[in-house]
Amino acid sequence: MAVTYTDMKESEREVAEYLTRLGFHWIFESPIFVYDDRNRPRVWTPDFYVPKLGIFLEVCGSENFNYKFRDKIYKKNGFHVVFIHFYKEKEKWKSFLIKRMMEIEEQRHSEAMEMMNVLI
Image 1 (cartoon, helix red, strand yellow):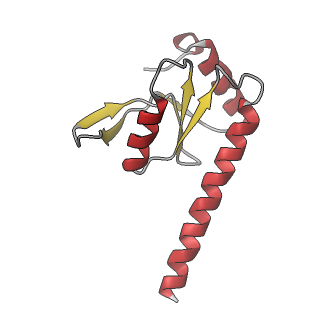
Image 2: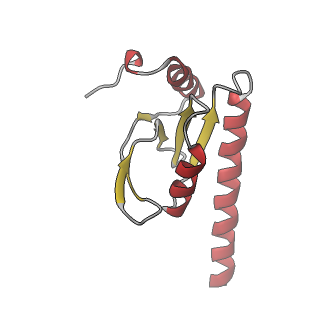
Image 3: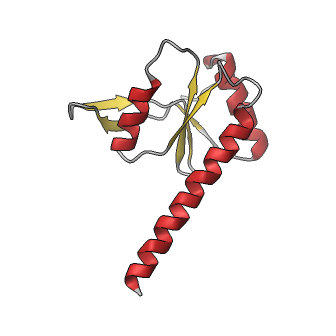
């Protein structure tokens, strides 16, 4: 089923439009399999998946949701997820997103270089 912008909250729509302007293909609410803090299997749907970068984005819309718990579970399961706190970073979220994307890419590069050093 095709996703339309009308299926999204306003903040998600802004992120989708920005990713599109940057030339990134994105998938909205692509399900992923995780184990929670008690090792129970769960299926979660982060707001966006950017295949070219292999990262997920969560558009945080409220202070009343436990994003720290989600971050902990994503990390435990090896997923790179960028949390965009749209409700408190309305003017800064774009630069924050680019910065986090670059940090993740740098981390991956460092890990790959370490693997190469082990092989040599």
